[in-house]
Length: 267
Ligand code: SAM
Image 1 (cartoon, rainbow, N blue to C red):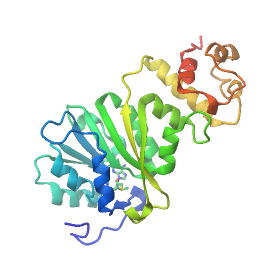
Image 2 (image 1 turned 30 degrees about the vertical axis):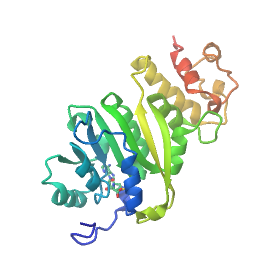
Image 3 (image 1 turned 180 degrees about the vertical axis):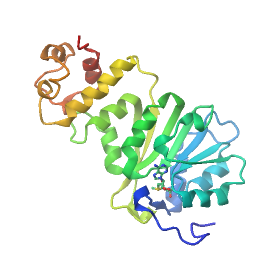
């Protein structure tokens, strides 16, 4: 059964719709999934943005428990018609940005998705907030976003997304997928990324909030020195006590240095 079974679906730009049409790319993506083959699944599988079901079809055949979350009402109806009678399939018709992972399963969740690029950053942060519930995530994103997530200090792509992603997760940038693999083709290259949440951080919630605030402030004006960008949050002495040079720029600081800064109490 193909995407045209109920007449053609017109891709909706506002939902970032680019459907995978390349069979070998689909196979390769599913092979990257870090999930035991059905029979002894430890986790429940969630697909974000199933669309016309390019990944959903092979996933529902292979895994014991598949939940999909789709915002587009027409696509949700097609998915219901195509997969609704499979006992291992659950559809949540909802905005993934509002999804609480406890709606998916009582168990830990493994997540896969060819994500809508227009909401990828807020969606990632929404999921990072629920990372205790997540085993691993395998996403297709805009290549540039994956490269920012995986960037090291000193590189021009290193920024807030790099530091915060690497604080929450181990990041593995995987294969690049060209625009021709999609219909309609996006204007940019895409890349797969695997994210494995790190065990709960040793820092407390307030310090974690402070880390997010400091990282945002430090990168808001990335060419300025820390003394400047952090002036509303830390004294020069606090920056030095964290082992950082007040004249340094945010883009040179490692994750551990940002954590050391967050650990400096403002009192
Ligand atoms: N997985 C399909 C594929 O690979 O062919 C479709 C991928 S397409 C890039 C993104 C999908 O996410 C679309 O089906 C779109 O309707 C859905 N989507 C967009 N925004 C969403 C949101 N906020 N919550 C849930 N699904 C969303």
